[in-house]
Length: 556
Image 1: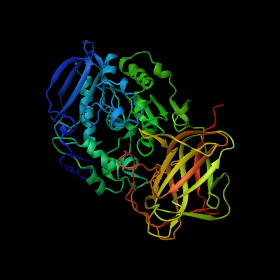
Image 2: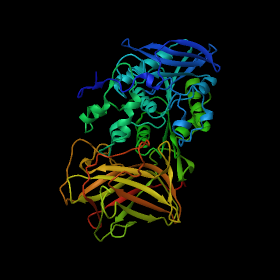
Image 3: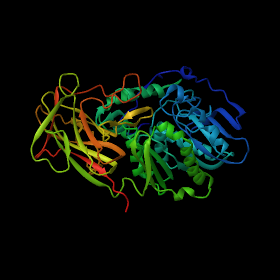
Image 4: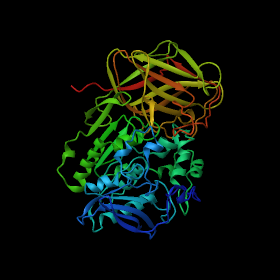
């Protein structure tokens, strides 16, 4: 049963398993590529429902540690990244045909003494029952599978979790239940708050990627949770959306958490929030500036994954204990940056610095602006005149900006009763050329960071907000009157970027997506806008519009 406060909605599957090569289950056991493979192995959940897994393990009968990659994409599926996502940077030749989507390469891990399980969760593909997604019920099934895996004769009793995106979000959920045989987790870029991080950026509905996901998750022979119907019924953050998030305060298992600066609008915020909030005494954070799938499968990344799991699942010497607790890449440009060690996240020695907007000059000033001014733009980018406002500052000495940014903005509109605002931070080199960065899993022209806000959702959650990170309450609409000037605090997702002397930071504010990609390219889109007419931004005097940036000095 769902938590008190809402009822699940269910629907017929969006696609049958055979549409993506899912064949009816038929148990078979074979020796392949030096592994013992058991396919369509039925595992009974606590309530008697059977799900199907593919199990790969060493041929020798010596008990092995176990890795589980729990996701809805089909245990049988081997994604050819080089064909389906040619700009994702994954070196296909390094992966075996036993690599499920966003999951560890089973052949590689088995060769190093591990057993690997790829399941089809309840109600997906040919597994029995009704599918729910990132739900308490799914977490309990994951718990049951961990305990089953930890008590088999071929298991050494220690289970680890691995995988990207959904396969990370599901790790948070089950780790909060602390299964006795769960020994370590490796969350690798996955959201923690479906409402704030996927479905409603700043309260603005995401209209392409979020509706696309159920089609990828919804292959079934039974029934599936109707996420889009539930989304329409729950426009504010309520019991439904809370049920999709873990209780991070109960997570105590050792964790190697990997985030990126590049998954703005999908995984960046959530992965870092998960690291901050889990109660694990043994936890490590790594933040990179590359494409997420390529980085997950990079041989050096796999080596670190193995070093982590070798310690906690095999009991090998604790090289991982010598790792810095936090490693962050400080980017210079696309795929160029330097890793630096830190002791905590956010970085304690950060100097949060205000840069004040000057609407008269289009500059960011280091001192408060005295003279009041305003600038405006066409909020839908369809009319004549400017379609954005932008503000620049040139650095007179090198600066590393690592962490959260916040935009405090005074704004109004002469038409309508609401505003959708989109914010980007960009970097320009000394010659005036924009510096691109990796973005999502497959773009190479991304910004430094992004932020969003629907003005009627501007009310903050005081219990979660900090000086540098405003967290929206999303409990009600607070409409604005035409001409009313309102203060807005916009969370800009974390980033890590170095600016050299003579380079510039640009703040962009507009009423449509930044950046834009043509359909059907996989990207965020926010097309259900409330914008009308022109947006007016105010600066100077009592209108203390400013950008708060995280300046991190070098260690003494």
